[in-house]
Amino acid sequence: MQHKWLLVILIGTLITHPSHAQTVNDILSRYELASGFNARQKIKTITSIGKTTQLGNTVPISIIQKRPNKYRFDVHLDEGRVTQAFDGTSGWAFNPFISTDTLKMEGSELSQIKESADFDGILHTFRQRGFSAKLIGKVKIGTQNTFKIQILKPNGESMNFYLDENTYLVIKTSIDLFINGLPYASESFFGDFRRVGGMTLPYLIQSKNGAMVSETKIDTVRFNEPMEDYYFQCKHAK
Image 1 (tube, rainbow, N blue to C red):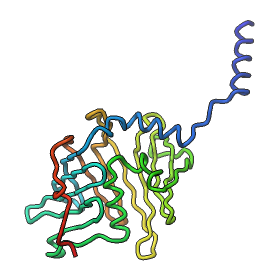
Image 2 (image 1 turned 30 degrees about the vertical axis):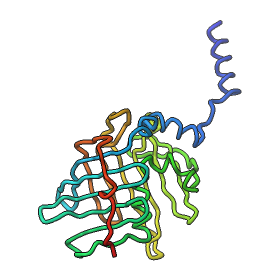
Image 3 (image 1 turned 135 degrees about the vertical axis):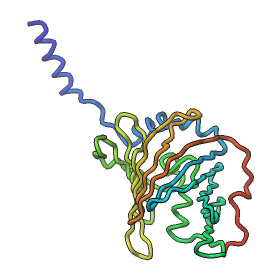
Image 4 (image 1 turned 45 degrees about the vertical axis):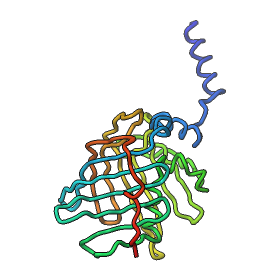
């Protein structure tokens, strides 16, 4: 009988004192811990080496990042190198299969690479950028329950981040853009998380941009290698 009364008291306590609902700030704080944000803040450069598969073809790639907002992505082909980069102010691209000129990025292309160049990531820097964050609710991604957080920009564009409810790591992102006045969506899935340099990083990224599907596998990540600014600069972009 005593056990029954204890059970009644316990149920009554749960009813009158429900568990505290998580806010977007609670979730982002847990994300900071899970992703190793404190360790990331001490890192100045990141070099990632791997391979990307697209349309049945697998090619070597490299990504170099330098704090606070320099970024370069290279596809290494036997016939030449395809590059996209952001030097902290301007974005540029070089594709010898399309043009012999290096071209400046504009519009949505520039916005996307600028966000890729954010060394700490949008979930850590959205306030400084003048963006807002909203917890949409829980969403099922495959077999995983996630918290969906929407980052809203002043121009109406939005970015959605899906954080696993157990690990608090981002397992999916989706972006809604306007290109030439038309809506455009892209999404990425993240997996094969590994603890490296005090951070938890995805070594597998599957992306869908419009009708184009790609898969990137990272083999090696290196930190704090000497990296001159000229790797990111292009003085001849048109």
